[in-house]
Length: 259
Length: 309
Image (cartoon, rainbow over all chains, first blue to last red; front, side, top):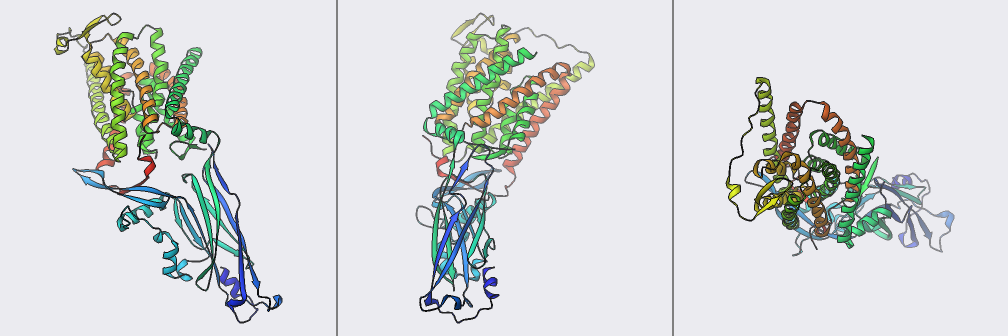
């Protein structure tokens, strides 16, 4: 997209990368996603501007951008966590969890999008070293070994739950300087700290990487209930019983009045 | 309209939950059964993690049974002494059940156990109900009257540690009620059911309790045992979702009141066949899911959900 816009420009000057410097400014429409009782997923806008500074020696109105080839990659991921992947096998006629692999430091949420498919502008090696793209997420066990079968299963699983998403073409660049990406978060997104990384790529090189923090948290009654359940389990248990007994007695009372 | 469940950590349609709770409540009001054995599988089928479905349902049944227990108590239908013995057994059973539940959850086998328990119990209870209803319909057609069999002395009478139960006009060993209570407790903890479907027949056919105190006493026991299960699951695995429980119990309470009105008007045996059919259907679905190769052989879960306190 960006490339097309650039290509359509009629200005023509020979490119000299050395004389340009870019600044990338990015932000999220919200820095926190609040999970309330009505939470059914969320949408955020990641946006930003790219500023190109011409070197002092070149006059600004003579800037040429022909041949300049910018692409933007957006990655949103949650804090790494440990996951267990279980495999069902047929044992005596029934399918049971029979094998498992514990993987460490895997994102519970990973979404990547870019101006166009990564392979068109970034080498596989760079993609791998920076962990860009679902296939480059490190899924290793305690022995630091990546088991293909389990890695594929993890990605398949997470993609079907919309916790991992890989797409391209949804990072929209406008007037060569503004860009935006609509991020669509499902309701089952894990709580915790997230970061949104924006990579600016030119000529197959990542020239700027800008990171923005995002917090996903339960608030209000949802947070209260969750905290009670996990931090004061005996209290929560007693409370749950009291609520049930009260509701039961109350409904019995109402039923008698109505009948 | 979506509602986010804070413990299950997923968003569900509140109308679906209401329909589920209300529908099963309707059936339970009509037939006088608890309904836990239907709601728990329905929750599982609709995507709630089985462990959360079971623990939450135990909480919901506490609400459903306490109102019933009070109603029976007002009519003098609760044998408190027998109830206490059943509770004593029940609490021990619940404790054991919760330990099994916690352990199996830690090794990733709790879903399997829940499914297997449902297949076994729903299968046998559903079949028995079905056969029994068909038989009584045939009897009714032939105009036969069920013979009243004089109570015979059985092995039950030979057990030691006898206790007198005035309300039930019985003098029996406490071993059997303790054992029945314990079994029901285990089921409450691992299946999220009240266990009335096991306890009521056991009280009638094994203990020979008078029928006027059977239902009230079993509801009395179920109230306490499911409360214990709720508490233990909260402590061990943090799987009780009170938001889900409150939605289900509100719907179930309303459904049960309507069901009770209809139940009084409708013919019993045909409906019981219907209920048996539903129980067998749920059982078949659970069994099917166990034996048919799943589309996805792998499951992913957070380590946090595996560790226990």
